[in-house]
Image (cartoon, rainbow, N blue to C red; front, side, top):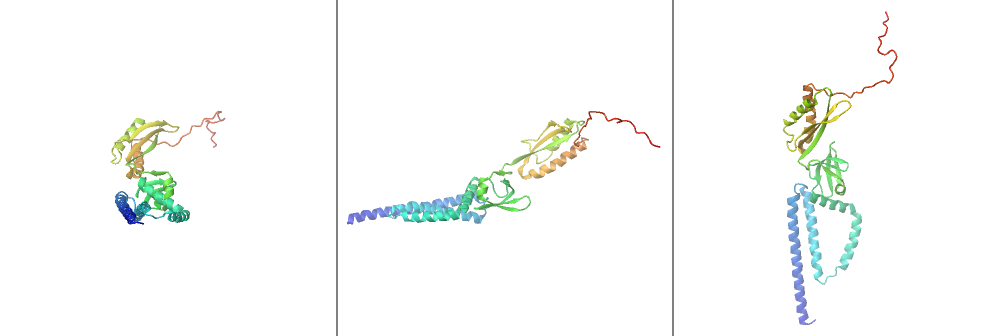
Length: 277
């Protein structure tokens, strides 16, 4: 190799080193930016230890990508490394398939944000309050106080019902009154009662209307909107208050009734029995 070739080779090597350094610096900068972003957006949804672990894994992944991009500029054959790495990846992949799937699902859940700690949810057949969201699993406390660990893969692929994402939630009653009672009076009593409650929303407001002429009663339908946070307490309270209010006005809630008509009169029916002295 002549001196000219040596100079050219040295210059090429120098530029490759500069390129490699720039790529690595850029990778570290991107990793830092991603770290700051994740801390700002996920600190209220993931425990600190879990978030720190997640950030470190992502940072290492970004830096490794930078190294992979920068190394081919040198006379460095990655074929053997890729072959060995690919073989190890296949072996490790079979051994940790579920772990990887749960980890990826956890990342998607953290980015999509369908649930967060404290939410009242139903995930598949499990209903309760979200306690913790880890990288690999989600912990839900059901309504019996039992803690259920759900793999994030199952969480991500299940139907998720979040009962508190919307600030308001609706519930309804069907109130049956006697046919002899004044339906207009009953509806007015119920509506005035709803207007006085501090947690029942005005927009959208409650609705009280005649819904059905049933076999044993006139059915009044009552629909109510209230803040999701107090939905259960308002729902249980108002049914009791509606019952008390309409009964105070003398309105009755009838029992189921049936009228039976015989096709043929029974002989002797309706006649007084002979008194025996």
